[in-house]
Each structure stands twice: as structure tokens, then as C-alpha cells.
Image (cartoon, rainbow, N blue to C red; front, top):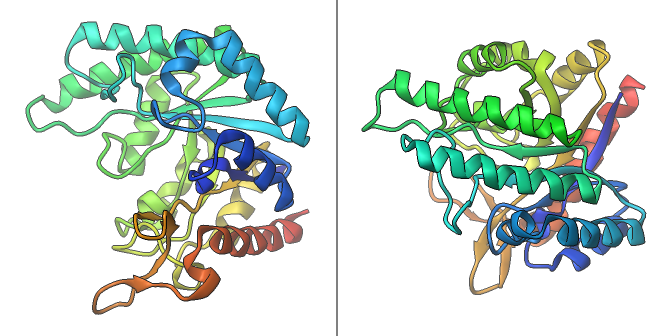
Length: 301
């Protein structure tokens, strides 16, 4: 069964408490929560250092709103306050990542999340492809083992610029690291102009999904500019009988003058301009994407 969710970090100008309340007020029942660094709605450093206390607080805030917690969106690891690559060439850094990740898994389990999401590591010009790949395999294998101890699904998001920016590489990694699962965001592939048929091979490894409009050369756009065939994608996932949450992810570009993220329309030629009215507000985009995805899900039920 595929269910609809939302990401609290779409509204990252709000505190965690405010974002959870706002997400619930919009009508969502399932949420991903951002923990992508020291300044995120869940402070990643604090979560790793005090997992029981932070996890209990997150659980309480979610329960107050009647929300189910889907994914702990950790993204890049910050073991010493600064983000590091999953496939860092330094073995000491990789060991620190896994110690840090253990704390995050404990926090996520305490809060009641289903899964925790990290990233696979980037392409590095000064490291051989083989060494970079092997370093990622080492860390991701460790993450799978640690997450399993806490009953958390170990998700990774293939993305542009990473060693898994192409679906064939992501398939190879999933086959090599037993138990690894993916948070699949087609926008990362669509923006590169990668045909969706190539991405579908990853559906067997999908635990979670993001709904983010995109088109070739534009990895984030307004819904009416979107070229991702969500109907075909979700029908394929549903046919496999998997239990998946697809969370609306509409993070805009932060505008200092407005004090919030904004959306810009991306014409085929010329410079992007601020989308008018609600279209340019992440709340407007969230509701448009949620409405369209929900209509698709209704046809599959």
C-alpha cells in the first residue's frame, strides 16, 4: 500500500513543534522530519549525543498532533559538527560516522520513526573510483547492521553528484550491500535527463519516496512544469505490493528578503522568476503536489 506523507522541513522556517502542528493542520497524517545538521528541526548533533531525551521529545510532539513519524531525514552525517562524506577516504572519519549514526538510530527508534535516511557519498576527483566505492560499501554495510539493531529501516537517497547518481550504480550498491533500502526521489534523475525506465529497476529496493516536481535540466520546478510520470511510477510500485510512503518534498530556495523559501518558475529560455501568488510559496506548492499525488493514489486503491 502506498500512503501520502509530508516533510516538515518543507517549512524549515518553523520550529519542530510549529512545523508538526502546521503539517497536521494541512491534513497530513504522516511526516518525515529534518535532522540534516546542527540547525535542523531536530539538531543532529544533539540527537546523537542525547538520543533518549531528544527522541522522547520528538515522540511527544508528534503524538500531541496525532502524527505518524515516517523518516528521520539525517542526510549527510555531522559526527563532529561539520558534514562529512559517507565515503570519506579517512578510516577514522568513517569510524566516527558509524558511532554518530548509532546515536541517531537510537534517537529515531526512541521517537518512533520507521526509517532513517542518509546519503551514499559523493564523487571525489582526488580518490579513485574503486576506493571511493569501497569506502561507501564499508560505511553503508555498517549502517545497515546498526539500524537493524534498533529495528529501523536503513534508507539511502541516490542523488545528483553522488556515487549513486545513476540508477545502474544504485542497483549495484543495493545488490552488494544486503539490507540496504532506498528513499527514491525521481527528481534527482529527471533533472539529469535520465529516462524513467532506467530508474524503475530500483523499485524492489524502495522503502520510501519523495514527491518533488522536476524536468530535464531542472531538478526542482513548479508542478505544471513537471515531466515526471508519477502515475506510471506509483502504479509500478503498487503492482509490486510494497508498503511505501511517498512524502511531498517541496523545499524552496531561501529568500533573505522574504525570510522564507520561495519557488521560481523556470522558463525554457531566460532567467527564472519568482512564481506569482501561492505558486511561489512552499505551502502552495505542497498542497498542489499533495492534491495531484493523492488523486493518483485514489486510482490505485
